[in-house]
Amino acid sequence: MEINETDIEELTHYMEKLIFQLQETEDDHRSKCCASQDLHLHEIQVIVYLGQNGPSKMKDIGNGLSVSLSNLTVIVDKLEEKTLADRVRSTEDRRIVMVHLANEGQDIFDAHHGMKLEMCKSMLKKLKLDERASYLELMKKITAQG
Image 1 (cartoon, rainbow, N blue to C red):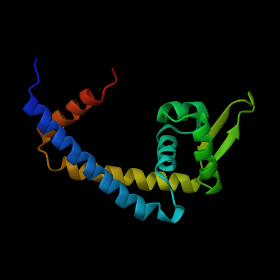
Image 2 (cartoon, rainbow, N blue to C red):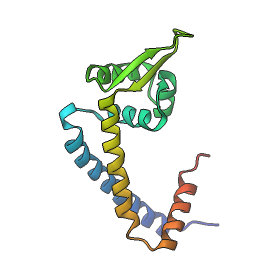
Image 3 (cartoon, helix red, strand yellow):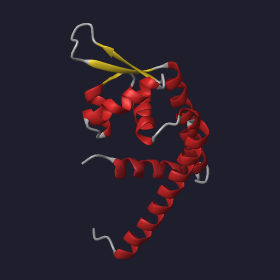
Image 4 (cartoon, rainbow, N blue to C red):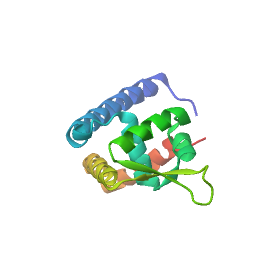
């Protein structure tokens, strides 16, 4: 099925508008929630990754966030300095380094996740029940890999 240029232009407009709204909300939340920690975007991304996936190998975090191991090492160093995360070497294989969220890092994840839930709730409440189901199904299709 052919996609016409008008649809592409309209979709691009609304996608840009949504991305802008999400970034604005994210920036506002980061300034309120994370300002005391002076967190940078990559540090928040690692906190979110660990909050969603639990303790993880450095290699898995790097792959999941598309960050090189050398850059990830610097990010995790900063999180450790801020007492938000800890590195733990495996007792079975010392080459394996696991990164865990410390309690304060978990608190930041919980606050960040709560903000995201509230943001999505406010977006979804604008839709009727059947529209929500359709929207969620379409989002699954659009964001599917491959």
